[in-house]
Length: 262
Image 1 (spheres, helix red, strand yellow):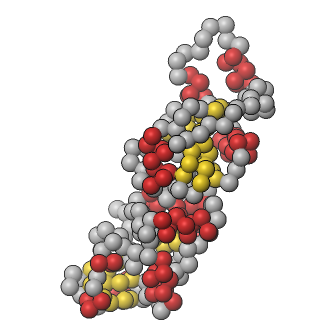
Image 2 (spheres, rainbow, N blue to C red; image 1 turned 90 degrees about the vertical axis):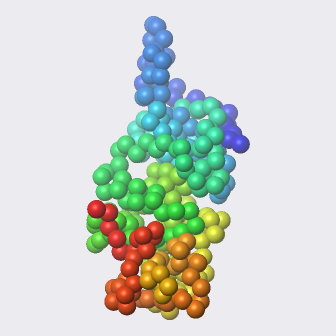
Image 3 (spheres, rainbow, N blue to C red; image 1 turned 90 degrees about the horizontal axis):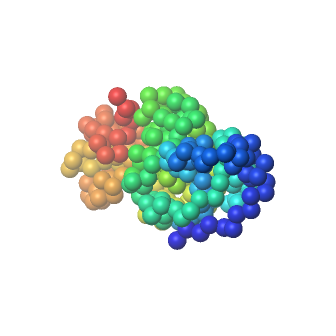
């Protein structure tokens, strides 16, 4: 269940000119006006513990863990320059998404992102639960194959981690890489989603980054749901997609290794 901590208006809105102005109106403000100019926060129990979430009239705009109420409000206002007020209970769909990682029915407010950042996050949002993709996959998917480092930077600025699953983007060498909430939290989330981290790491240590089935002629990322169904007798590993394709394999249509967005 979500919990809302007792709200102390000092110093968050008492001296905010916008909020003070609304409060001084001679007549009541039009319905919904406050939600259009200010965001509301709630504290919700998530898979990694309690998180603070800011919601606007457009959807979920900001999410952070490891902060108290004051720190969260300050970080939101520093980033968005917008008042932040206490809200009511969290929507059931939000509570469910933060427990399970399934985000159906969740609206996000991604206003303020640069086009490149938004493209990166939308690509990350396409990674299914229980699977991972390398940073280079994101870069290729958005048509910027040389921008791998910039992809990592954009993921680090993800305003709504957990809801946009940037924890499912990992390094090509089998290491999980950095995460806004820290590497231990990233590993915990991936294990909760049943990602085959040990297998991915073991294969990477052998320079195997793609796996194929000789019965289907399809090559996948090792965490792909289809790759995990390949029986040992028909399993083949490859260092590169080009090596797999030269052996007659075609990219998986589910995990789409090496395939950009048209």
